[in-house]
Image (spheres, rainbow, N blue to C red):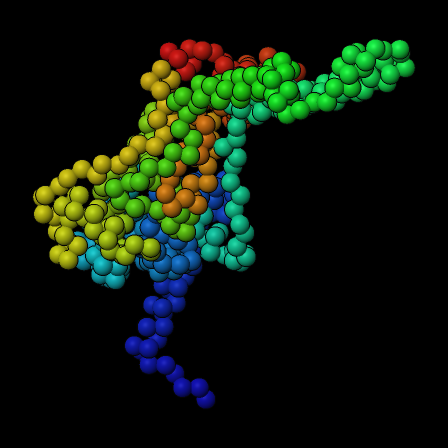
Length: 419
């Protein structure tokens, strides 16, 4: 006969069973809709990825399985919107996380709706269930190019002219030999015969009008090409790579840790300028990560000094000083460029213009950023019209084309950039 369980044990089993049902119910509430997962991915990459990964610890804990670690979905809503309030309430799990990660408090996202938070959980759950695939070397967009630079054309023209001159020289030599043979068959006096068969010396060749013309032509052509190249390079700063006051590595941050560009350069989403990240953005991460991958504590100490932060006590001294970053990408004042129009509306990736930024320890100007380079892009780039009623009439008018290019919607009008 089986032994009956005691009252307390039976009650404990019931509690565990009830809690497991609650957690499983919470997990089942997480959507598997691809649209929901896609929306969550965008939010995760834009705001969460700087501190979190799905399957590994970073600045904060790994998020895989978070639905099984917290009491309820309401707890997650409260935590995302106001983590400081949850910690201050004395919640055991919140305090545990806070203490475990060096009292580094998560940024509050009080504007997030329930659906947005659930979409992030949907993405995290979908990623957690995926089997890790072998790493694949990422390809980068071809944003360099030489569009608009005539140097290649000038080289081709110069080489072509030299080839033509050599061919003319060969033809003239053949004509001279043919004339000599013809004159040898004629009855020439001694003086004429001596002239016909006179030998060319180095001195006579150098003094000849043909040689002088050839030298003058070559020198003039090379000088002309150099001047034209120089004129076209005015204002072009491709490959400009200045030394910065702090050795910040995009290869580490955007490459190794895959931090979304727009997490730091928030202006790219909402304004003309991409903006230099504030010092608080750096401190938000480096109040926890106090040593750099390549430079140890040396470069991070410069950030602390600039913001007046004492990492040993976790307090601010009040003594601040600016970080004098050196600007790299600098369009002329006569040209208008809006980051948000390209990033938000057109969906242009940062690498399209800035190159493989995730591979650069020291950032350089990757593309030409000339007017010809921009025009060439507007002629080749398709307009993303899907789901945008603004373009419905234009699509109807351009139905004879496979796809509308930027130039079809006024992308080549002078006033678009030179207002």
